[in-house]
Image (cartoon, rainbow over all chains, first blue to last red; front, side):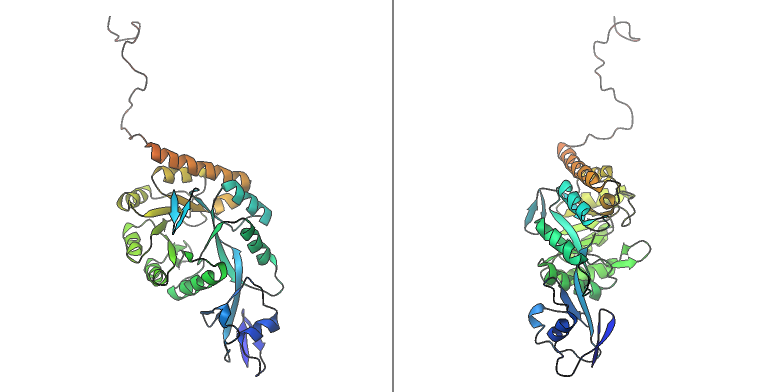
Length: 67
Length: 262
């Protein structure tokens, strides 16, 4: 199964397809981040139970400077 | 006092955090400005990138209220999703709502802005919409539930100052009970003083401070200008006259003056 994370393709093995697994694998586990899958926010409380599907588009975002 | 949501603020200056040459300069400028609200945004997290982490740690250490924006959003869906992310990330229901309709001028898309505002107000957000000085659009945003309207002075980052004084004056006159914060296009402290003298409740700016040769001094200058402008509004500015009117009394002029009575 493959997913797109911040614009880059990643392969996931069939057993570890939760959003939490993906973030752990990629080292994206800062306390100050939020995750959007297919243009919908997935609250942190749901990361463990949220199952990714083939082709899912994942965006991991963090605070930045803004005007 | 300027109130946003349930928060009463002593400063009428809201400051953006972008474009500063260094984090330290940004921090010093924020402190010099005496602002209590700074705008922030979101971007992709990269595994090896610590810069954003430092930025957020710095902002948290300053004990300010943050106003996340939806900069770069061009549709209702993008803006609403960004607001959801901001609420999760920053733990605030305040959102500076931007829905851009034109890349060249960064004009807000009024139709999409109203729709996004209505949805977000319905979800409990305190929506601060970045809009034009158009009165009817402001009215639509108020109908959608916005308690604060943020008209631009000029295009974002242009520093031109208030371009349409007639429309801004009309907006202030027609929306007496609505909090109005001039957002975008201010270039120098006199611009901030000018709109606050007109009765606007606050100003939000970024480039004018961050792109100054000395951002920290400029932040202080804007703070003083905002205070001066508000004080002048409360003091009541004199009416403009078409013709001269002597300020020195003409009664009992000495006799060598032409026309003086003997």
